[in-house]
Length: 242
Image 1 (cartoon, rainbow, N blue to C red):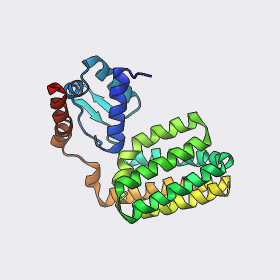
Image 2: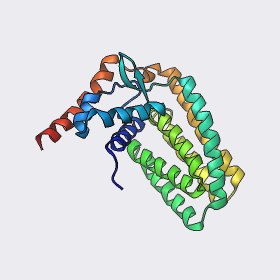
Image 3: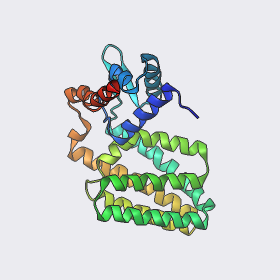
Image 4: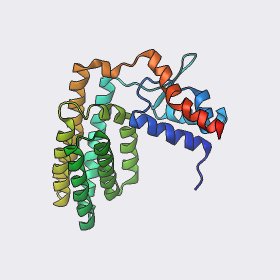
């Protein structure tokens, strides 16, 4: 199925926001987006309105459009909700998992261990996303997964920023191991507890990092306006030349 221009812009911006390429507080320049995507302002504005409706960007009249920057208190509330949903989803997965899916989880755990050994944040983030996506798929509850994915999009920029803090990556892998073992045993209550504890453990680690390094939640105003230009303008120039 061919994506509309609005969907194409929205999906790309969602990816950049969730990955941290467009960090919280970054200004979004409509003109650069139009050039980058080679579209008119209409689909760009429609995409931004959709992102604003889901809380991913903030449209400030006469000030501009910004990636939403959440407070640590807002993040704590989102992560509490995410813990409940992930727990319920993982409990469903424990009751529905097949032997083949157990083997796939074990293979993913080995990949995570390799990323941990090599201290590769990028590889670990990929493994982490694939592990949770597999568990969500096994659970088979589309509506619940949609709510989880929305909360993950909102919290991922912050959660990924502290994986290298306080040995969080290693702790995360061991939490995944406990979760995987509960799923392999098809132990629903233990799987639910492991999944919820995993999210809440990350929330506590995030809270400690935020208090110790408050600068991680503040962005220089000039950087907010320059980031998109620095990243997209060279690409825009490429498209204009070809």
